[in-house]
Image (cartoon, rainbow, N blue to C red):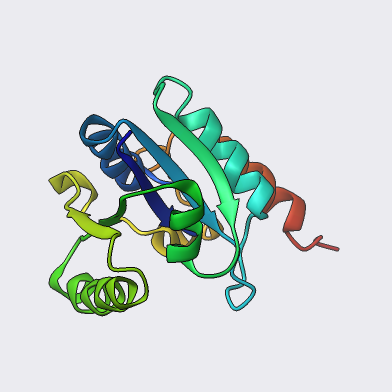
Length: 165
């Protein structure tokens, strides 16, 4: 079985992520969406919330599994029996960082390949950070995220909004 890992923080997942994931699902027998637990990043959503959103967003894809992981990505990939890591590239600036990571991952575990996929043109400007910023400032995000994520963003931001006197 050709299994790949699509890792990320997915805080929150957006349409660019899902585009890359859907195309990766056509290339591999199984794709594991690996939600990273990174204590160095201040996440808006918990790992469990991100896993739940991604599970909801991918319920129509039979060869997708969503899991969380902590630690080295290549170790998680080896434990899962993956042969490849999927990474999305939006711009040249992404490439430099992703190339360094892929070379280091290859040094750590030479049998795991990195596959780069570019998003559809409509998603090249999307990032989780931008989506969060739009939502925090009261903008509509429904064109950028699946409906379940838009609902979760609204609920999260309402529950964490400071109370006005």
